[in-house]
Length: 320
Image (cartoon, rainbow, N blue to C red; front, side, top):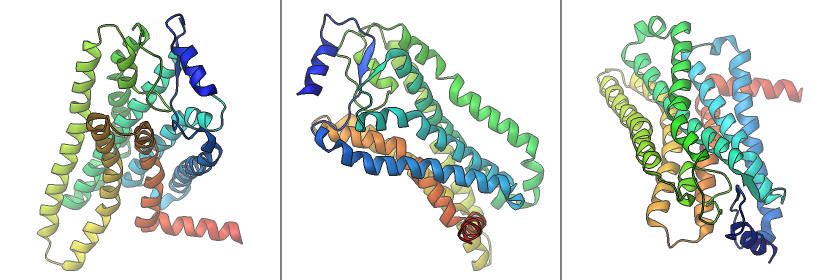
């Protein structure tokens, strides 16, 4: 068929192209118009949901607090993650694109990985925020001042995008002699490494250390913070106060699970699911990219009373 002939032309040894073929749902090309409907809906919800959360926090003075500033950082991260992949994911389904240039692929991989590290850092910061609010409430406002929050935000930004720069730059200078077919409908660092014939040891070891020092370390610190929070909450005599303290953490716990479960699932599929259909790999990749940005606005809109009431008031005004 047409797609197969394009693949053969693209990966032919005589082809000296720096373009890469993006992989959609192989074997389901005839259903792409239908598959594009739920994906377009998901992207619309991602963009509108996170923009709405940011609007509510921006326009409601009562939400100008550290907890909601960190939530705004999370919404910005999720919004950018959606924007960084929408052109290739929907482009394939709508028949607009099939290939991506090396420079565009490297740029997309840079933002996808950087935003993943940023989301992990923001979730860790939110865990720190909950720890101070519950375990040291009297000093909460003096510890998390506006200037300190700005410094935390800049540190998160630097940590997320500075340390991934060296391996991403190296991708530009690799020789890609294997078939230029990516595993997903977007670009990932490990996907490009798989196609390279150059010495990739630096990228492999550096990326592993980066994952250990960011995603894994953040997960351990988040778990440790909740051990301390649980210990502090259980020491509260009043059952009502304990319930109230737990309620303030539920939305954050859900956000952490929504972020880490797709990452673990995708890793397991890549490691042990080589016998699975390519469609499963593509689907898990899209879940990893889209599930957190889709669910976080829903979680915080439902679980946080201040945001929920403000949104309800906003929609009631629109209806009137």
